[in-house]
Every structure is written in C-alpha cells, then in structure tokens.
Image (cartoon, rainbow, N blue to C red):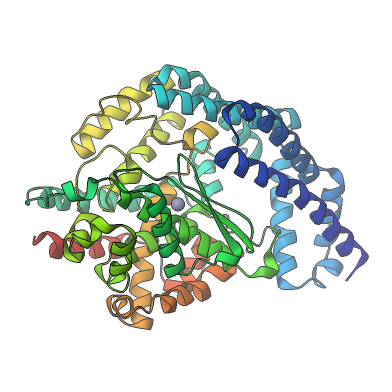
Length: 499
Ligand code: ZN
C-alpha cells in the first residue's frame, strides 16, 4: 500500500468516528431520549456532524484525493478503492462549494424543523410548521445552487436521491401508471369490498413485537447484525453491514400495519446486512440510491409480503402470537392485505392506490421548486390533488399535508424513490421468475431464502458501487419501464377482485 493510500485510510477512519457518533445520537434521539433531552442531543448532533462535514471538505482531504487520482497512484488501486476515490472526489468537489456556515445552519434548521413538524402534526396546525417548511425550501434551493450550479433545482434534487434520474424520465413512468391505474382502480372500487371489522380488534403491542421478530427472522434479517426500536415513523438506519437497526410503530387496533412495516424495514435491513463487508464505512458500502433501496423494501413488503403464498408456511405461527388471527382464514387475511381503497395516509395505503400518493407528492414538489407555488398555498393544493386522484378530502392537515416527515428535514425529491422502487420491482419479478421459476411456488414451499439469496447476489452485495441504471441493466438487461408493474397489478387484482 502506498504511503498516501495509508494516510487516506487513516483519515477515513477518523471521519468514521464522527459519523458513528452522529448515527448513534440520531438513533437515540428518535428511539429513547426524552422530550427535554432533545435540545442537548440536537446540539451534540450539530457539533459532531459539523466536525464530520469539516473533515469531508478539508483541503487536506482534497489534496489526498487529487494525489490518489493521479495515474501512478490510481492504477495501483484495486477496483473498490478506485470507486471510492472517484466517488469521494466528485462529492468533495460538490460539498466544498457549500460554505461551512450555510451547512451548519442547515443542520440546525433541519432538527428544529423536525420538531416543529411533530408539534404541528400532533396539533394538526400547519401554521406551526409553515415557517420551518419555507426555510427548508429556501435553504434546499440555496444549497442546490452551490452543489449543482447550472442544473435545474428539482432535477438536481431528484439526482441526489436516485443518481441519473430526472423529471423527464419520471414524467414518462408516472404518466404510464396514471393512464393505466386510474381505470383499474375505478373497476376495483365498483366491486364489493370485504368486511374488515375483524382486523381492527385490539392487538397487544408486546405480541405485535413478537410478530415483528417472527417476520424479520423469516425473511432473513440477521439478529447478530440487527436491532429494533420503536418510533413514531418506522425507518432503517445502519452503522455498517454488521449493525443495522429497524424501527416500527405499534397501533393497538391495527396489527397489520406493524406487520408490513416490519417486512418493509426488514427489506431495507437485509439489503444493508448483505452489502460486501469490504465496503463497510466507505462510500462504496451502504446503498445511497433511494429508489434502489425502496425497490428492496417494497419487494419484500408487496411482491412477497402481499402474496398469499408468503403466509402459507407461517400463518399458524401468526395465530399463535396474535390469537384473533386463528379466527380469520388465510383467504380473508389475503383479501384484507390487498384491500384497495381510497385512503388518506400514504404509509397505510394498499400497493395500487399508493402510486397516487406518490404521484401527488411528486407533482407538489414540482409545483414548489419549478412553479414557485408558495408554502401557504400548499394545504389547498394538497387537498385539490387528493380529490383529483383519490376523490377524498382530508378532514384536517394532520391526515393531509402534515402526515409525512420528509419535507421537514428538507428531503425534497425523495418521494418519487418509493414508486421508482415499485417500478423496478415489476422488472425484477419478471427476471427472477425467468431465472428461479414461479415465485408463488417458492413462497408456498417456504423457500424464501432462495429469493433472498438471489437478491443478495444480484443487488445487495454491490452496495453503492452500481448506479441505479447499472443495477437495472445488469439485473434486467433493459431500460426502466412501468409496464411490468402495471401487468403485475392487472393480473393480481383481476384475481383478487374478480374483475
Ligand atoms: Zn422504505
């Protein structure tokens, strides 16, 4: 190893110590720390992430990256370290353009905005959140101006979450979905709906936690590299492939909600646990493409978890842990987990109408960043779009525009990732069945481990080293298209609803 490479690795190691603390503080803030402890956590979090940011933009790092990018050094690196140097140099040049005080102010504003959003949501009062949202929009624009000069702001934001993605491609994909799904949902809603009363009975949260672990074990989330926590909004966080944490929220009368959150976050978690461990604590590890990440959580949640055959080998176990399910047949359970209805809350939506929840948010974001629609106008615009796509109007902002935390921390351009994930899933399913045979059969025979192994080999192990386009090309051998997802929906719901 050259002296320069050794120095570079030591530098990365020190940076990782700060990032480790930041991750741990964030985890504790979200899962454990009491309300009055939040302020000190925010202060410490700001301190350490500023340290990490300073190291990631220090001239010293820039000099090392320049040195390693020189031909004599670069050609001596292995493929992984070539990727790391190239990627870090690109990010370095981008981040270097953000003034340190702007970044620090952004991190603090993010934390304050997150707390204001929580308060606004609890009191269903958009005006509590509005000034913070306005600030997040302004700061996001400002920062994008530094990182991606000359690029249209919203395209720059999309590209930050899903490299290579732009609004022209998303317009095409979402347009295809709108055209096909609006009539499909109309057909479905014209059919009789199942009675769902039995699914809203009391379910002991402790038993729900056991169900969560039963499901995580079943899909292949490793306990020796995993932990769980409880939060308002479920998420996944990882230190490395050896320490991946997922959270859940247990509603006393909505046990199905926590089951599918467990499978969804478990899908994210399995991804992270199976990234090549040699990439740990580098930019090659932990997958940074949100659409690709969602494609994994949503593959487990929807393609597998909402398939009747997924439950065949474990349905009795579910009944042992939550006795009310002993009284419910697997057929009725299957109907309920694929119950299509126009509803207010994105995270509780069925997989078909879910698409409209994302299309709505995507169009809102375009309105904010491209058409200059003001923050004050947003609740009305939200309600108009809910009417347009789902023919319902939220009774308050808590079940409308305030329901998601994403905009509170400035994650504009993130929402489309969820639906891109499902679009990719339609494509993976085609390829997987061509290579492994029927997924129904594999699931019915309890051979889900073979599916997980396929995903490990085709997608997970690469972490961030393959861009979304490269993943789709390598796995499916074609350009991204919404057609397979539409075909999957039509086939499945024709059967479920007898269309
Ligand atoms: Zn997710």
